[in-house]
Amino acid sequence: MKKKITIAIDGFSSTGKSTIAKLIAKKYNYIYVDTGAMYRAVTLFAKNNRFVTHDFLDKDSLIASLSNISLRFQFNENLGFAEMFLNNKNVENEIRTLEISQLVSKIAAISEVRKKLVAEQQEMGKNGGIVMDGRDIGTVVFPDAELKLYMTASPEKRAKRRYDELIEKGDIVSYEDILFNVQERDRIDSTRDDSPLVKATDAIEIDNSDLGIEEQFEKICELINQKIS
Figure (tube, rainbow, N blue to C red):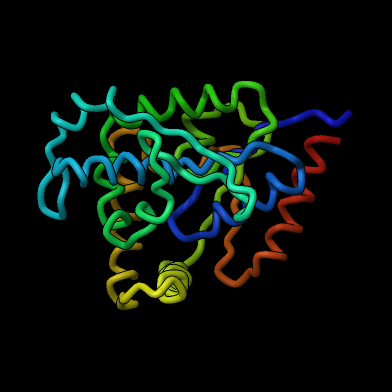
């Protein structure tokens, strides 16, 4: 029987981390955890309670309300992946909007939020057989993960992917707004004081600016097979 390992996928926004992670989880029958969805759900909670807007952040009120936030993933057989539930409400669609994308880095920079979510993520993955993607998985959540990947691509390519995604969903957005959001999230994620986005020293970098999903998937499966054989 092949051993179950922990796979940590870090990297910039819109590098396809979640897409790759879902494919890996399906192929190897692993648990998939989208940590970005967890931070987005907390952001939605903060927005709904008027703790955050584009030019305002009531950090203390959000911290005081963290015990009122319950997060869980529930697998949807029709979609083939787990959806995010915030306080027992399915918020999968609500957390994927451009507005939440524009606010999430502010919320993710709060140490108390990170502490709460990291503890939950570590509990989810304590027995291995998990693939988790985010910004600090290989550096903070699972520093001993057997396989660490660091996904990157040019801001322009990532903005185009995100733009196409939102247009397909029927959202009215401009490419310029998306590009600005991508660059701003990169800046905040890479410079925040608590758990900034950095490449773990033992992570394997994958620049997918010009790589398709199938090429990336094949490359990553080879790396996984080396680890579990």
